[in-house]
Length: 156
Ligand code: HEC
Image (cartoon, rainbow, N blue to C red):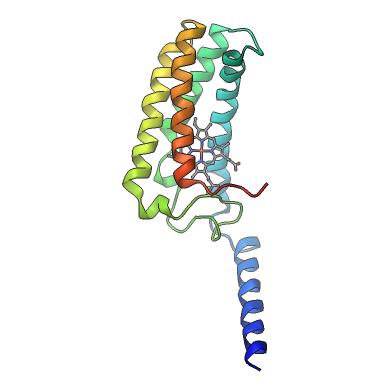
């Protein structure tokens, strides 16, 4: 009997979570938007990354534009993209950790670090490949520093 009760409780809980995640998710738009912002930065960073690796030739115009995009997008991101409660497990498709809110000053510090690094990349990407590379590596570090602390690793 005790076991049956537990099973029912588990089933009810599972149904509730499915309902929240699939239908009544108030965070669907906000999660989609922040994913879009992140993907835009990843796409522009990828263009410069290919030049750093040497898989594409350095092109000052393309690099300059990509770097300006990363700086612009980074400057748009704020806590408006991370409303309270929109974390992994509560908002569908989100890999955001709850520590974003419980450790908010540090999270915002990491966002500020990204903006600083992206500003430097914007100033240097159009100059030459070596100057771009140094600033590019710093931006990559700023991305990872925040992901390591605040993004749930995705199951592969
Ligand atoms: C201040 C913290 C922070 C910084 C800095 C940051 N990210 Fe993110 N990023 C996140 C969080 C949190 C998520 C998970 C969001 C979610 O799933 O709700 C994420 C998710 C992503 C994703 C996955 C998007 C998807 O569709 O699942 C990509 C790609 C990404 N970030 C790229 C970048 C790149 C590139 C940079 C640097 C230019 C960067 N991020 C900088 C916090 C950050």
